[in-house]
Amino acid sequence: MGRALTVVQLLPALESGGVERSTLEIADALVRAGHRAIVVSAGGRLLPALRATGAEHIELDIGRKSVWTLRHARALRGVFADAGADIVHARSRVPAWIGWRALRGISAERWPHFVTTVHGLNSPSRYSAIMTRGERIICVSGTVREYVLEHYPDTDPAKLRIIPRGIDAAQFPRAPWPDRAARAEAAAQYPPLDGDGPLLLLPGRGTRLKGHADALALLQTLRANGLDARLWMPGAREPGRARYVAELEAEAARRGVAHALAITPPTGAIAQAYAAADLVLQLSRKPEAFGRTVLEALSVGRPVLGWAHGGVGELLRELQPQGAAPPFDAAALAAAASALLAQSVPPAVTMSAYTLQAMQAATLACYEELAD
Picture 1: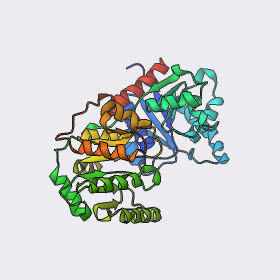
Picture 2 (picture 1 turned 60 degrees about the horizontal axis):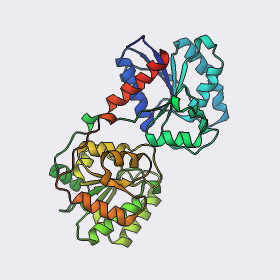
Picture 3 (picture 1 turned 90 degrees about the horizontal axis):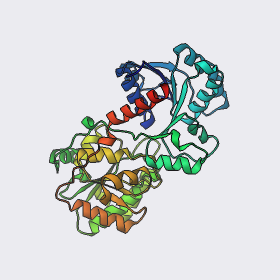
Picture 4 (picture 1 turned 90 degrees about the vertical axis):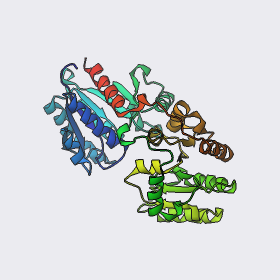
């Protein structure tokens, strides 16, 4: 390690989500490597977890989409100066704009290096273009890198670094196949999941973009082909989604599969849910920047089936090609599902490039590259 660095990460809040999780993971890695980690946000329920890493937090509401948020630029400039920031890392668009504005007022000899991470495939615009102004632009997948270069052609490719989000394999240990205890526990909690046939799992929020309707169509096809398949949708039933859930229940009834379906709130034991399943689905209708579900499920030892687009398709093509189905081709999806379910043992998958430790090391190397 070179000299100790002070790294300031900027994001809207510390409530939940992939951006927030990555922020905590990098803060933890910085502190353990002897650096100083500061996070600026509006705070939230993950604040105790951040502080437990040894990182510092400064509360500023720099994520609100309002012209009044610009007033925080002066305070943020003071944070950078007082801390002697070496790196400013913006993880979201509004905080990036505020951070960029704050940097404008700092003399050249004290100017921190500016890093951005493109976590999502946001609609191209001048507003979103701020994420391409970093001296280093971290892309969470090859899909994101291609998206940036396509929509922001003036971006210097040499500034881009692909650093995939990683998972902590210890939190997703390989489970027995099949894991009868995990299946029995899921069925005890949700009786429609009880049966001798395969269990399909589609985790995700209650929104059409997650492809719940595609999963229902697949369930109908598999059952029509003689499989006593069941489907679990953890996360689809949540506050504010009652109308959507009612639509799904009506669609399931129309397809004759309502008795083989459990639409439930999010589970706090997702690794055990993967273990209970025979096949994990990732059917997002809109291409996603990354496919964390793919990595988590494969780590547990469960095959994954998804539409071959975006970050999900990228991971499936590399790690488990037989699970990559042509987008929105229901027949191909059903054929792939049948083939995956017919496997006697899911193949072991090597994912050393997608571990939490690899992500942390690559990010710190990016910081140190700039500082040197």
